[in-house]
Image (cartoon, rainbow, N blue to C red; front, side):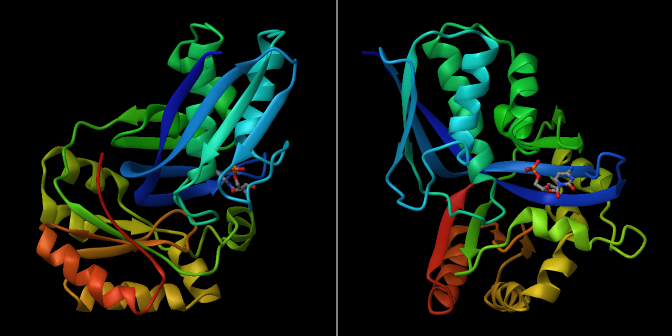
Length: 283
Ligand code: C5P
């Protein structure tokens, strides 16, 4: 039996701008994404029986088509006519329905792992084509690191940056499903985000520029639905964070702090407020 373990890091949006609605019902987006060292782990093991088995240490994870790791295995198996089976074990650390791309990152890690296990020798572009059939954030998760992401999510361009920062993540005890947020968007009303400014600030390592330009066009909609998100942001800022922003469609809020002492203060003040508080680094 051969097993391969892949790390699946969480993603954060330093910027999320909505350019308009597409004819396919999706939205054209322009985003800046980063990966952080809060990770799930995907282990794939070959099986003689011609079936896909999914298990997880999180009992809330479905073990069928509803799980993105299952979808990834099914797509690769069908597309490349694989005759053997696979067991997939998912060790979950990234909160679910949190805006941190956990499911997408798990799917991307599964594609990478099965590419090795089944000797498919797929290029990144080929893996992205498979990933896009699973979800809009999967292409980014196949790349990872600092990246500008456009289109539905399939156009990923790496950014040369090295943001030296601590990140405090706070996940409230409710989730928000992305597909319920997008229908509420009025493209003429949303607040826009200057993605080019975020990219150039990162490239120049200009922390002040980053603080001034960071933003998420989905924040107003999610905060209108769950005002607690704003309370977390305010508490992060009053306890000394350099900036605080919701990631994806929420509800997770992250704070950036230049030094660890500052990050510890934010963690301590948020701990009594929310159960799930994480101090991580950018990858
Ligand atoms: O592709 P994915 O299943 O992750 O997208 C979840 C939901 O987010 C979609 O059902 C759609 O409502 C919305 N979405 C969008 N435009 C994008 C990406 C996602 O409208 N570019």
